Image 1: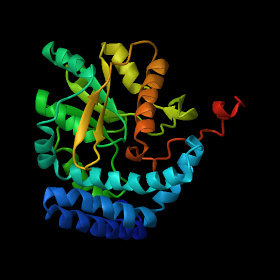
Image 2: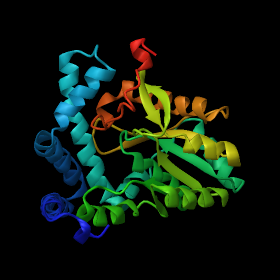
Image 3: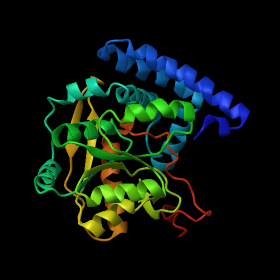
Length: 305
């Protein structure tokens, strides 16, 4: 989008926000990696999150999806989720250094053998994650081992920030496909040609299937299961799990999702992510509006549907 097409006040607001956060990123990039990552995590958790209302949204989502959590745990999650988000952001801009740190990681789980076998046979494979830990750690690692890995992304609302963010996203691997009809068509062609495709499937999709996440209705896109069924592509859930030092990762590749129906496969992906989030709730992006209603339909978890 051309910034000139924005209303003047919105253009000024976005430009100012990009100056501020972009300046923080440029300053952080001048620091050694081991200081850079925690510094931006701290800044996002202690400065950005309160100003942006993130802590309030995290608490609201937790009250909706996980109301039995004790207050001390809610407070910990509300503090640590933005920290992980900040670390992930600056790791995106530190692609080369992140790859160096991932080079010595040993992949875990049965899904890694599935990926190896698919690549040896020249077959496509979907590696699917959510906004959990650092999802691009997985894409970076797989790209180092097998070459280019495609990615589907949604452009940021701030058009100024999005310009350099897209460049940062392309560091782990290319090509990148913009979310939308055209991007979906390009992605399907890429998959048909026998490539690896990385996607995140944990955001609200208004025209998606009414599946569940944490027992609550969560509208979920079914494009990945549908494409996988059409072209006989394995779907491997995978996670870059940030470790207690805040800098290193476990890379876990689960069993592939059994091919059945798109709805069953989509729910299996939701369930896989939910299990990981329950183990490490501070690593998932609770800031998302994951449980948006659609047309005021009743939630099956409320017993009214």
